[in-house]
Image (cartoon, rainbow over the protein chains, first blue to last red):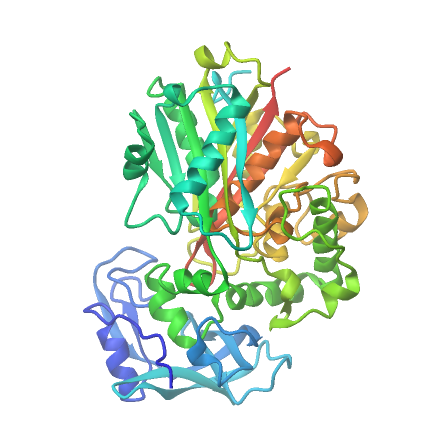
Length: 133
Length: 386
């Protein structure tokens, strides 16, 4: 089977990816302005504080917008297509892009509640997805 | 009134012929576009002292090695890192350099050589956010990202597939009068609505066809331009804005809304005084956002504007008169320059069958897709000097 595209994991992002492997959703929160952010950064994009904390969050969110992918960008996804890919707004605020596993193709899903699940990306790395609640 | 770029003129425009397949290298495409543009200006290569180059496939080469390759001694170099916004941004930077006396003749060139596979491959490694947080999640490439934007726009404004279809069908009509457009067969609404599914709500004709080509314009100082017989075009104003608004991926009007007031004020031109628009049409929804951000119509009214005004070269407000990227093809970074070249061709009165009656128009660019949206927006107002 063709390998999936994999993220580059560095000092900035390792806590997120390590938490995925423990099936926990962990994102950054600014120690100063208390805003949550995603994707992992070196400073808070709201107030530029350089002090960010890692916080386990509920993994609950709502679908902002979604698509059913028929033509994939990488052949490693062909076996899964068509599948639903969405922008999910976490209850804590940030938007995360991920697949919505088991969701019906081309149904209207805007506003639907989802919860985080974790799937195998490689033997060493799990990746975040969501399921409809 | 005094304008920012007084004394700088767009004096030439040219293209490397667009093709679905070709063995030409990016350097050759850049050269062919530049050579054609210089020819239209009536200027020799010897007078070129600046280059603004954008090409996704240029690395590990860069604008400096392009200068060496072409044998150009350059006082000004710019390389675009703003994707499809780069063509216009390069033109603006070059205009500043010429205005400030740092160059006299600058070639603003974009070219690339893509097919679907190489386009996806380039996009996968486009930047950190795409590589690390979009691609491993199976985002479906640019199509998936803009399917998300399209659905949100449709939900917000009640827009129908037919509304985007009106736009795409009109562009095809424009392309039929442009011999350098690659898609020139008639496109009907039924063709559009029933085309192959890509990423719902997007189907095949919402998406550009990656291809091979190049586009170039020539900017010259007053001193040089005065000696030319070619028609002169002024840059009445130009602007760029990035990561706007920073806190909202889904503002649905992007950077253009952030600078359009300043753009029109600086140009001393109102939106209703424009004769045409050449907008960045990677996807129809982005054109609608540009129309609204650039105040060609009120927010949420782009579909009505397209339907009521008519945007073909026969309509009352022509948009993308050469067929745009959606019908000409997207030659990578050239997509950010094709609208400027078409604007120049129209303002010079060289558009043949698709010629419109015009004196001024707006051109815009968009690019560097990252976390859920393109980060860079650009635009300029071009006006023929009478």
